[in-house]
Image 1 (cartoon, rainbow, N blue to C red):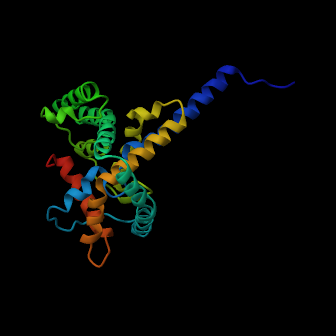
Image 2: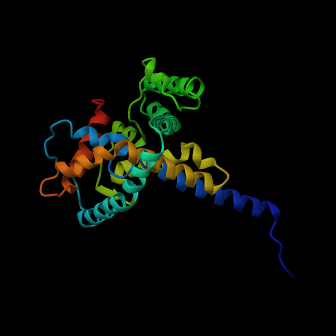
Length: 256
């Protein structure tokens, strides 16, 4: 006799598959900000003078390879498309799109602050989200900053650092760029609370991911280019690695 799958099991399987696809797209969407300019955190570093760090880098061979791959993707794919995007889309629209994705990341910052026992900062994020989502038309306008409600870079990797977790091995992630073991372990938690995880269809998640990547690349491409110019003999691997680790340490200490 032929066995017929129970409709309930089929439905549960479809729900799981959709959730899994949404999770992985959210993982990229909520963490990707154009390779080596994650929320401008690396670009900001080159405006100040930093000393070289002693970074635990046991995967250096792989890291240097992936570092080169990511730069290749940036040079031959992301930057050319971002140039077209910047020339075609008016500045006001570009800023609105960038603000929209910043607003969309609210759940990550809010929960990370709460887990770090920073209720004041969490309530500040909540106030920003409510104001920007309502008066700011879904986050297209950053009304909160105009009313002195400012946001800061914060995620679960920073929370783990505040809890006392060491950074662990430095690692360069495909597409996402520089990271370390502690911060990489925080990415799935960010994806779980990111809104696009729960979209019913794969297509909207892919479209949002592509648009955010374009927006961030266009926003920070000049800063990314400064990284290349600042490197000694064109070797920017150590420069990016040390800048990333120092930036993350400063964020954990609350110095930024």
